[in-house]
Length: 482
Ligand SMILES: Cc1cc2nc3c(=O)[nH]c(=O)nc-3n(C[C@H](O)[C@H](O)[C@H](O)COP(=O)(O)OP(=O)(O)OC[C@H]3O[C@@H](n4cnc5c(N)ncnc54)[C@H](O)[C@@H]3O)c2cc1C
Image (cartoon, rainbow, N blue to C red; front, side, top):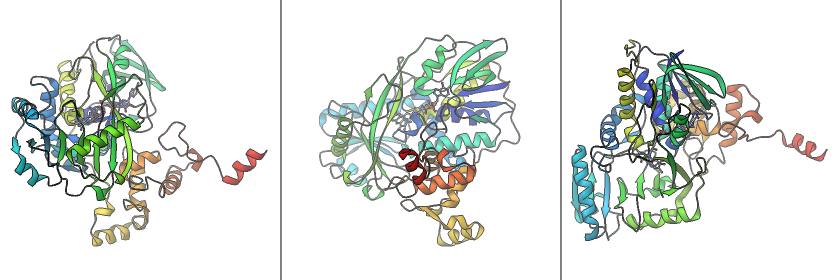
């Protein structure tokens, strides 16, 4: 019997697992996909929000500010890129100024530090490419950027290094309450646990229903994005938000920690919990609103488009509730959920402790995770040294992002292991560049087959039946002809 079973390996499940791994506890994460960070955490704006957006007094407000404050330290421990680039909410007219003031007042009430309203000259000095129509901005110096899936993967990896078990391809389908806890049924052997954390993202209401909790519902809200190549970032350094108004709501322009430029997101409610397709209308809206902030954006440099689904709850706040002893919901964790994740994890663990979960510190706990070698960021001396130790670092597989075979092999064997092509991509950036894996994809497939000792035909893009190869051309052809 585990002490805690966490359902869902997004950022909330990951941070909760890491928080629990400080203690002498048996913890398991159950994830329905072939890898971690496959839900909302994979596709969002990647902003560590300062905390001026949420209504004062809400969990969103408190946990956003608390999470944002500890994020930099956590990223250092986990070897994850983090940049405190600051954010600007841009006003274009006198009409927009009350909204800027409202956000400022909220930020102050929420305890956000280093917040100010700046005028046109200071704004232009900070961001020379910003639209000439901009008149003022809310400036949050504590706003930051991070890579959400890198953080998610690293947090699970660190939790696993400290003893947490991860079961992927385990979809929870039913839960029975028993005398000393719960029996979880799913696409694998039953799992018994004294406590359950429901961190199932857009499915968190469905998982809650498995224990008879019908207290909340989730509506998926799609957000579409465009991602631009490195040379499109230009002199943009801050995260640039439009003041929300009838022209455009919530669409931002921001550099990423990997020096791309991200534009988006839209906001459209839908019923489907899986549909993450982009649409021509959505992308057009992204482009129009992004150009409002930075008119000169070069959208010919788009290298990919994607969409993510917000898990919008019907309460307006995070749903961190316990409908029955030992069962904790982390539902409705929409934006700023990434920023709040460390604080949400802390909140859940504190509340489980109050219900009897014994938190005995584990003396062997190590908060630090060995980061993967980043070959492209090394000096020539460092490159020579790692190649001397392991010649696989001298073989560049992804030319767009300069990713070596050594890094890919490391990613396949580190916790949590990469089992498919997209998992390698999220850990190493092989396939993230301009050619989007057109060149390196087959080589990554070959390396995965070799390292997992499986035929090429069994390597998938993202688990399930997403096979990439169906056999040797000659064999497939003769089969077709027969
Ligand atoms: C468009 C958009 C922009 C955003 N921008 C930001 C931002 O800039 N900053 C910010 O702070 N936040 C942002 N957010 C919010 C943030 O991304 C989320 O709050 C956060 O990722 C939620 O994490 P999660 O772990 O709750 O959910 P998820 O990442 O979705 O993880 C849930 C996991 O549960 C698994 N699962 C579901 N059902 C089952 C089951 N039955 N059995 C087993 N596993 C299951 C899923 O496969 C998934 O891996 C944004 C969100 C969106 C959509």
